[in-house]
Length: 192
Image (cartoon, rainbow, N blue to C red; front, side, top):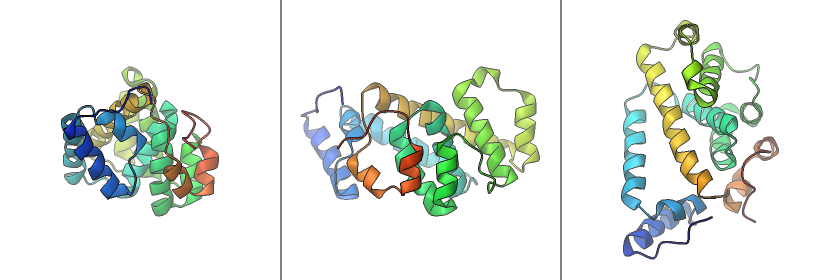
């Protein structure tokens, strides 16, 4: 990572919470430790969005994986690819992380994956017919908004991590299915 570790008492407490929760301190948390209040506020806002949402855990994982792939973010791809593999299968996760549209995705999931890629790569070129495709796939207006905000949150989070040089942790790689590890050929190399 490009920033040196923060030595403040607040940072130490923040990192200790991460150690207690994960069993190790994630590399990205070392960057966020410079402003634990911002990190915690970001997590709280994301939680607020998802707690009130009807998007399923599988759809949330799909959005995060499609965002990570389109952005070239290896950290989130490995972390969330593992989550998507648990709820959809390793082959589906690997396909999404490779930029493909797995045939086993339903119409709703396929539309959501395409929308996510559009929002990541060219949000100002999104079109009314693309939003209509989401409606036709069964998304409500609120769900379309929520999915779009989720992509934006993930972009903000990944931008901080990527710009400050946070590489995927060895623990993330070790816990990822082989298919997920093989699919993530982009982004920062892992810490070994």
